[in-house]
Length: 256
Image (cartoon, rainbow, N blue to C red; front, side, top):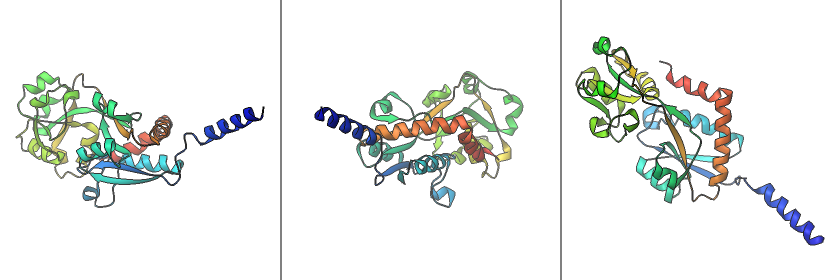
């Protein structure tokens, strides 16, 4: 009888501590040095400390659960490597693919992006409606950002001339009509046009059959609190979207 009581007490004690992240544990979060506005805006671009939609969410979630964190800026490949094999616990701004599903724990989608094409207003009459991939390929040179994939847009990456990691360089070539069409995500476009001097010369339109892309936070599977961290983040993200608070935070970045 005594043994049974002791075992019950031990079980209850274990359950009470399960799922808790130590208050002394600091979570190391990696964001790409090139930035991914409006979600991750590094200091070099924002002229202040790291900011963006990701940080808005992190502050809300981690403060609520009394979790300490530190944002670390590294090249993208280094974020991914250290998020699997090193000192990084969370990698921000990741699209999903089979290899990442195998290598990391993926959170619930943090946000979704809308594939679009953009062009000089001088072409507005001929591009006033959504276009198919075939129609866009027939127009001429299609440009995009270096290091990104456009498969979800419906294009082969070989169809796209990848100019630079910086989207404003693609804006410049579209305005100069050296690129007939530029490819990006609507949310990124609206955020970056806010500070682009020739923004009024650029219009955008949707791509037929291009579906929204969910983006995730990747959690290091080797981290001892990985499952607990995923449970907390998933629950809070769902609640933030249900309440409308997440969308309100995001909308603030899109206002021109």
